[in-house]
Length: 187
Image (cartoon, rainbow, N blue to C red; front, side, top):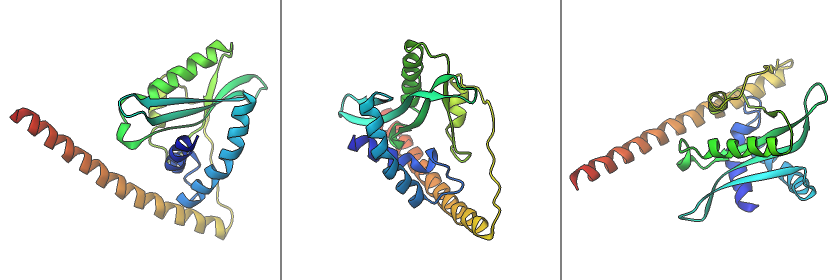
C-alpha cells in the first residue's frame, strides 16, 4: 500500500483537479483520502489493480476501481478513481493493461459501464479516448471571488513550472535514448 500511496502522490497533480489546486494541495488531498480508500478496499467496495515490473519487482502502475459507483440515473457502474504509471514507464502500455483489466473486472461483475473523470490539465485523457472511452460530458467551473481568481493564478504558475520541468525531462530522455541508439549501432 505504501508503494501505491507513493505513486498516487506523484500522480495527484493530474488526477485531482489540477486547475484549482496547487501541487501541495493535491498531495495533501490524496494523503487524506488514501486512509478512507484503504477502508473501502478492506470492505470490498474498491479494487486496486497493480502493475509490476517483474525484473525489478517494482510497482510501476496502479488503477483504483470503485466497484459500486452509481451514474446520474442511479444505475450501477464501476468508476476509475485513480490511475498512475511511473514516469519512466509512461508510453509502455502499463495504463492500457490496467484499463483492460478494469474493463474485464467490470464485465465479470455484470456491470455495463465503467466511468472516469479527468482534470482538464491531465495530458493522458486522450489515451482514454483512444482506448475506447467516450467523452460523455464536460464539467466547467467559474471563479466568483477575488480569492478564487488569485487561487487560479497560483495554480496556473505551478502548472507552467511543471510544464517547463516536464519539457526538460522529455529532452533528457530523448538524448539518453539517442545515446543508447548510437552505442548500439557501434556494437
